Length: 207
Image 1 (cartoon, rainbow, N blue to C red):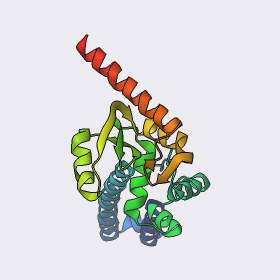
Image 2 (spheres, helix red, strand yellow):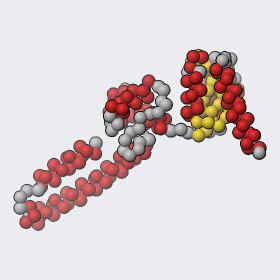
Image 3 (cartoon, one colour):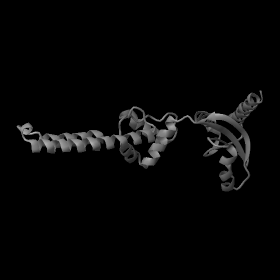
Image 4 (spheres, one colour):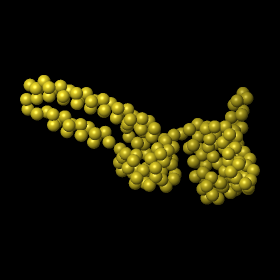
């Protein structure tokens, strides 16, 4: 976007740079006015680009390939950015078939390793793993009203999104639906590991 804008600006200036222009005060004044306007517009454009860069989790003006994003959409975005790291978000959204907001969300998710709580819940004979940057009780409150069975916290340990993804990847063979798993084998092992992390945190706080 910025490159095409600069090209248009250069063409506009070249039309004014005719032989003998420096000997025409009125023409020179017109040129200076155009250049002043262009500088102001470029500065404004750079501010917009900077805002988009920060919003999308970019670095040095380049979109970052999502790390650890295991959705099909994330994989498609990663492939496009590997092909062209400077591809505009609008083009990515069009080629993948999602909104620009969704692209920004996935880019931020891939870059981010939030600190918070990794929890295990039990409900209707199933186990759910999740992550929240808030209090777990606050996180599961709306969930409790959206499912037709009571939900209980099995473990509530310090962790990040990477740990959550690691758990879900390890338990994928026991997935029932979405974030819910059969309470067996490696699923229960991860519940116990989270309980151990939770206990270690409590011991550290008490010491």
